[in-house]
Image 1 (cartoon, rainbow, N blue to C red):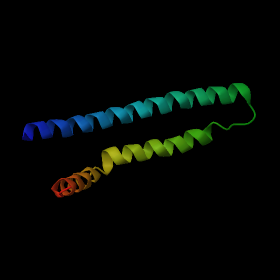
Image 2: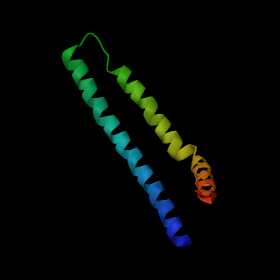
Image 3: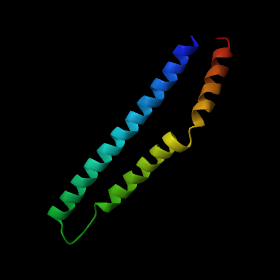
Length: 88
């Protein structure tokens, strides 16, 4: 039982990391495409940096939530345990 719990927690962490790296890859690809569109359609006016910057903030928060502020999962676990202890 304990091994299954450890395995499921590890699996969730790996899936979260894979999700982040997919997010990062899509961000990079779309950023390059936005810059290419920007320079090909309006060489005098640059606008691509605004969506890249905004999305970059989202990627940064995704990374912080995944790699820095990992204590949130303990909070979730306590809430789940509390809910499981309640009777319907």
